[in-house]
Structures are given as C-alpha cells and as structure tokens.
Image (cartoon, rainbow, N blue to C red; front, side, top):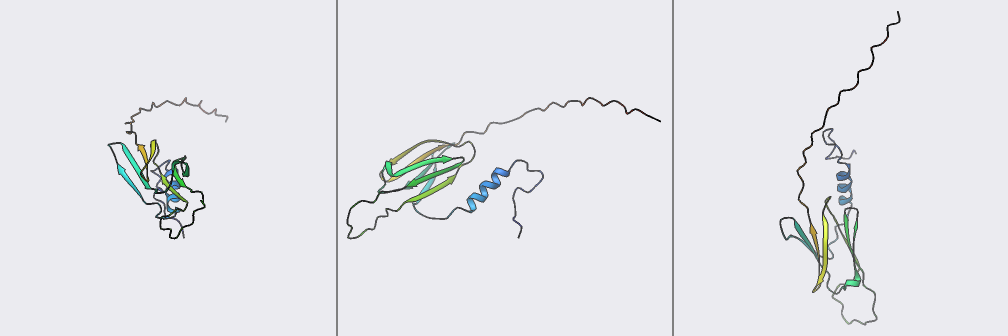
Length: 145
C-alpha cells in the first residue's frame, strides 16, 4: 500500500525534512512515564515540565540531537530493602521534536519537577528581489548548404 504524503505536491519544494520528522514522530512509542506538561510562559517562550520525583541532577541527562530533545533518567540501584515500593524508580527516556530555530535556554530541577525552558525566536520577514539575467545569445547556426 503506498504511503500518503502531505508534502507530495510539486508546489511544495524542500519539505523533505518535515516529512522525515513526521515519520520519526509516528514511530515514537506513546509511553506515559514520566508525565509532563508543556506551557507557554511568554509570547515566544515555552516550558516543558516533567515529574521526576526521586531523581537527582546526576540521575538525569538532557541532550539535543539535531532537532530532537532527549531527556533520560536512570537511577543506580541502592542496597535498600523495601517492604513496599510504590514510588517509581525505573529508567526513562522522553523525547520531543523541536521546530527549527527553537533554543533551549535552561533547565532546572525543583521539588521533583524538571523544568526545561525553550525560546522560539520571532520569524524574520523575508523579501528578496531576484535579478533576471539575460542569457548571452548563441551565434546563429551556420548554413552549410
């Protein structure tokens, strides 16, 4: 069965990266741990907040690979003996696909919540006049009759 493409129009040039991003998003697992919020904190700023109770700064890593933000959490096994363990201590990986140009301005761990602040720069209006050059005319063909 052929795959449907949103960007399969001859009028839409250079959108191959968007198509690859959509393919990557569709293949991402829909795991719910850890829970997270995404909020708008200003006209051009966003904040991703993940609930990571029990994790310390050294248990967490935040990486940006191309346009994919990866947050990983891994706790080392300790020697505690639990009579009941209801607080999750499993490792996780949560990823977000960021639009081109979004910058990560900081990350902070506060009371079991990991906040990652993002800035979306304002798009610049782009108008460009393209000069049209006249092609040098080729010499008339020589008539050899």
